[in-house]
Amino acid sequence: MTRVGAIADEIVIQVFRISGYVKGPCSKCGKEERGLVMFDDYALGWECLGCGEIGRVDRVDWIEGPEGNPRAPDLE
Ligand SMILES: [Zn+2]
Image (cartoon, rainbow, N blue to C red):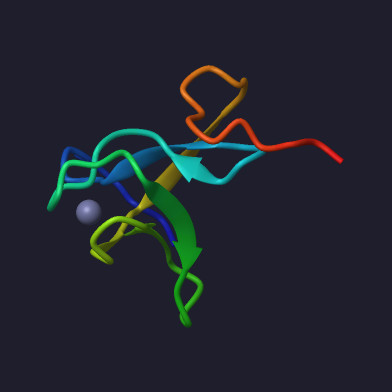
């Protein structure tokens, strides 16, 4: 898959590497409760845990760190 030229319409989300939490509010309900999902065709996307809305993305930016993680998961 090669893209040439403008990528202005590319959809990119930022995902916390450890938790799988997707940064930013849901486009439908506005809650920041989105998780990363993978579709049957291996495309990546997000699913809102609040309202169930899903969306596809072109690319994922993996980000580090506990900052912005609302769940603060217990590490085993
Ligand atoms: Zn939502």
